[in-house]
Image 1 (cartoon, rainbow, N blue to C red):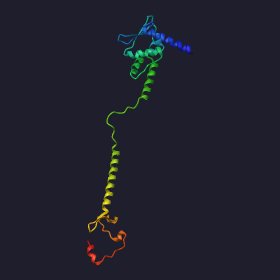
Image 2 (cartoon, rainbow, N blue to C red; image 1 turned 180 degrees about the horizontal axis):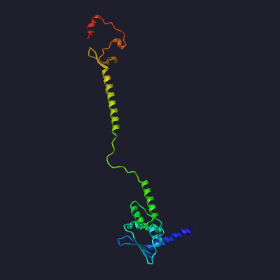
Image 3 (spheres, rainbow, N blue to C red; image 1 turned 90 degrees about the vertical axis):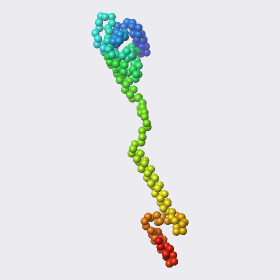
Image 4 (spheres, helix red, strand yellow; image 1 turned 90 degrees about the horizontal axis):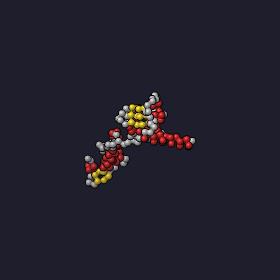
Length: 209
């Protein structure tokens, strides 16, 4: 098997060298711009349906006009036919496809489609340029409402602590009991949980407000 593989590689290598110098070539590929690409008709017929279906003639060579076929793509396609290697890249994929369509090489078209599919799968995700995306409006509202609630609770605690501070008749500032915080209601000893206190008559006038 190794000897057969080596023999096949040598044969393809010799044919490719002959094509490069136009030796023993009986097919001419004309792209319409005055440039001719020599090749071996029997080798092209092994892969190209266009040459396989063409009728043989008695002329020394047969010319095939390939209008609209890119020269770069045709060079790579001929290299594939003579060596079995198709050097595909994202930059030359479209040109090779055009050449394969012009010369009717289905195997090369299948390789191009396979390469195109694998390139899409390996394509990395690119980050979009521009300013960073802002938080959604609903999240902003939630954060603002929680902050406002925190501020309100802080205000209530501050107000409650300040309401527990009272001033006596003598001018002293003391911390009063919690029952003094009730707004609009004058507390009594009974409501605060203390037993009733009898006030002496001489102090009754001073205690009245």
